[in-house]
Length: 256
Image (cartoon, rainbow, N blue to C red; front, side, top):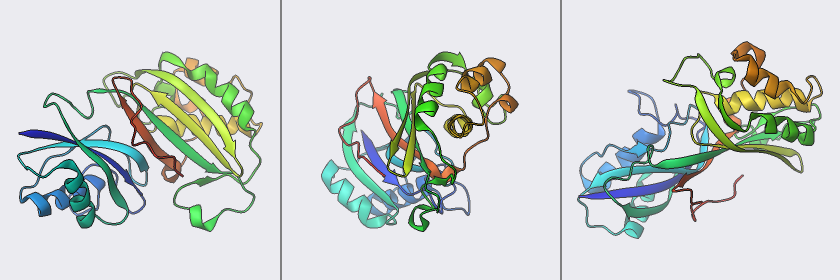
């Protein structure tokens, strides 16, 4: 038996998230269907995390077990031939049987993309949140530093309590501008439901000048979702990459 690790990218628009759902298009459902067409048996895939409806990935990781003898490069070509064009397998490799796409991860990094132009770009409407008023990305970056470390992040979790614990460790938060696009990147050992989107909504209030730079840290300390900013819409969120053993994957692609 082989344990095969796939690195994928996908456009989440039009999908109801990663997890398979009866009668609804999902990333997991499309991937498992493609593999079944090649190998004859429908596998059960495990992902590093379940992205929500409308959320994208640049470096999602999934695994499945199989007795196939097809080499990894052949699997990549064959699976891509069966997948919709909105989903691509970037890389395949054999990993030990005890490797777990979710539990073996040491950190994940997400990027949220904001279109900060006065007039929204119609070609990026499925991959950005348009914020038409000026944002000060330097204020946003400074505010975000107050969220780093190991804390209870229930102020940034939708429908708390949603998990067994809302304690997580954020290793890095970076806000940067790339012409009219503002990137909010967060790397942590794990994420709560809508955590990055809530952090982004909070930092946008700071970047607009409607809240002070201490707002994010104050919301964190308040331990109440109502004290933080709004939840940013899903289409601007990308799973950038997943680290295993603290190593940055070589298949990481710089998009968008």
